[in-house]
Amino acid sequence: MQITGNHQMARIVHHNDESVREGYIRNGGKEVKLFTSSLKAFQCNNRIVIAQRKHLDDFLRGRIIGRLECGRTQLEVSEELGIAQSVIYRLWQRFQDDGNVSRCYSTGRPRVTTPNEDRYLAVTAKRNSRSTASDLSRQLSSATGTTVSRQTVYRRLGHIGLYARRPVICVPRTATHCRLRLAWSREHALWTPQQWSCVMFSDESRFSLQSDSRRTFIWRAPGTRYHQENTIERHRYGGAGWLVWGGIILGSRTDLHVQSVTMTGHIYRDVILEQHVRLLRGAMGAEFLFMDDNARPHRADIVD
Image 1 (tube, one colour):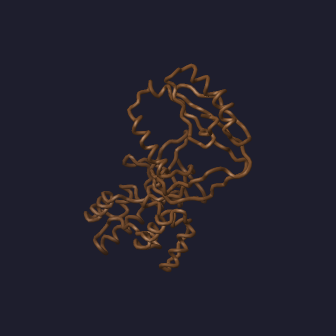
Image 2: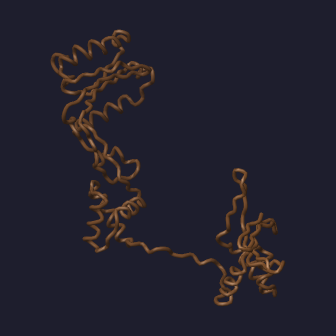
């Protein structure tokens, strides 16, 4: 493979099981070599793709120094190993200066925050999980004088497992609710699938026709989505909307009931229980168990 232009040429040759790029110029019919560099070649979509090696490993550096110490010239080592002579020269100069040929790794850009400032961000975010990255940046600047960007705050908190997530919306629960739910769960923990097949769970949800951006975010760790401190209690949606009721049972489900008016005791008795629940109860008999969410219309006197 040859690349020509302005009487200068470059070609790819195979040397020591490697592809070597040689640059040369024609002078009076003679070829004068300009450079030699090692390449790695592979085939991609029927095209030869050349990828130049960026760094020499320590073993190859040792081979170069060993050959030079044995009296070989830099040009000979360059041609033998397929490495540019300038690289050989710099490596030899460095070895003569400090006796070290290992690659020096840069420490990179220094961190803008100290470990203490990172801990300050973490503690502040945990104490007030609803504070934004901009708020945390301003608090850090006010407390320590260090100014950081929002992205830096995201990275620092991400290193300790805190990420910005939307809180879970749930209905308000009192201590009595929690105690009764836990007791019910323990009583039914060992139920068999046959027993659960006779239980029907139902619920209704109101879907608002107004936008709910939910732009509030909190800082929380993975696996803590349903922790109490990561939830927001909300009784109802504001504005107009549609109420949808449905029930599920093992292997089956009811049709969805949709209405635009508020659920009342009369509607719950005449529509939900009579048109949906009564049919399943008649099919299953005395073992049928109906579970609702204990809402106020469900416990009205006319329902009982």
